Length: 392
Ligand SMILES: *Cc1c(COP(=O)(O)O)cnc(C)c1O
Image 1 (cartoon, protein in one colour):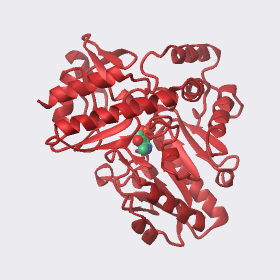
Image 2 (cartoon, protein in one colour):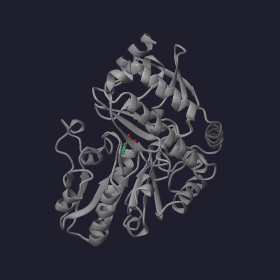
Image 3 (tube, protein in one colour):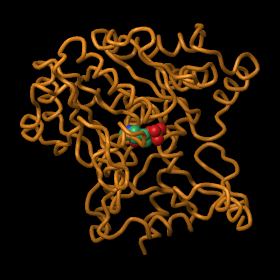
Image 4 (cartoon, helix red, strand yellow):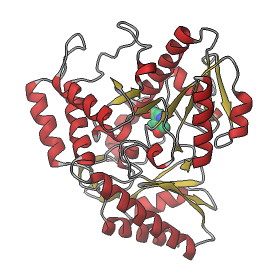
């Protein structure tokens, strides 16, 4: 393993703080490294492997699609893309989908859509308001919208026309909105920023303000969407419907995918030639997305995720009761939970990895729990027992 990692360090750009583990295979909620050690995976590729590892239906669908057609240009139609788009609009308040390949790309596209819409209906508007402590991805517009300086240093000048306001504060947003504002972008549950669901009343007021001023309200559901919180969109539980939502991570169970969903009035701002993605909506990713969509909507996975999420939350709250010295807060929705730790999260995560449990932080003082949506109550109990043991 050490030799392989050394090779990697010689050949791969040094952009990630990685653990010295080479993962080789997986089954269900477990992954195995190149030395045969097995871990319970509560990271799931950071909220990506929604069906776990080696899911039979997913493997079969991808294999069959690969034999049939891997990729075709969007110069032509392909059936899996039409099917997935139809499912997404049927099960959501949105009218149209645009497929791309990642979270950042979907955020980027939604901001272009907002500016296009403004250029047609309110030509004096260009400003985008996003939230402090947010995370939207690594491309220039997405990193500018991201409200955390640590991700932006050394990159200036960033994209002009993006302002940041306090998250979950209606007063802050109201004060920042002007006759130049064309869009408001936010995560209904902040992920990287520390697993923070926005308040219902706040979101409803934001919704009303944006509707009144015809400002495009965009929810970044890249992490909290696609069933992660127990409903397909997190906003379904928060009582506010945006004009557009972007999703990515868990939507195709591990195959790269991203999507912009929008109401017709906004979607129509894009005309032929305005936006494109070579790989966007390709049959392979769409075949995977269709399997995940069917598991969620047809085969009960949404209900399972909701139940498993309640169980995880209850277990974490119990643990907080026993270790109030260590756990300051338990936050989240469904299978997107975080515990705020009294000290740094990193050493605890390392102790858990030693004991065969993969966890990831969300900021310096939050340990995040985003297991596959198929996770069982027993696996949740096992993970919580490992964590409690690690705290000793
Ligand atoms: C991960 C994430 C992104 C970026 O997604 P990539 O696929 O890494 O580009 C954007 N928004 C949120 C909320 C995320 O969690």
